[in-house]
Length: 103
Image 1 (cartoon, helix red, strand yellow):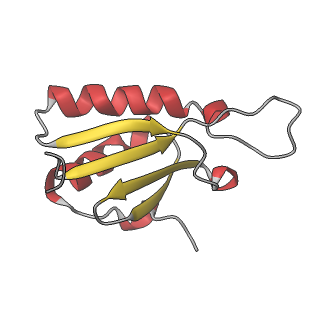
Image 2 (cartoon, rainbow, N blue to C red):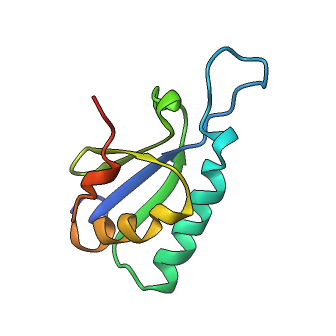
């Protein structure tokens, strides 16, 4: 455990203008997903975690980008339907294989 947390999750909330040539996670409602995940974790009493927004993680074209430390696991998220799997990771360290970001 580092800094008092067993897991630290970052969800990209980078925003680009609508006319930008690249996609962004903010347009995919990443901030709403982060807030819903934080609420669910608190409601379920998941201990010793930190979930927060991040700047661009450089993978916005893949979907909502997420990285979990200390493992360094990268996920591509689609929305709130991913929350149960993310909570499993935060609670038990169980990697959601079907959400892993492709290399």
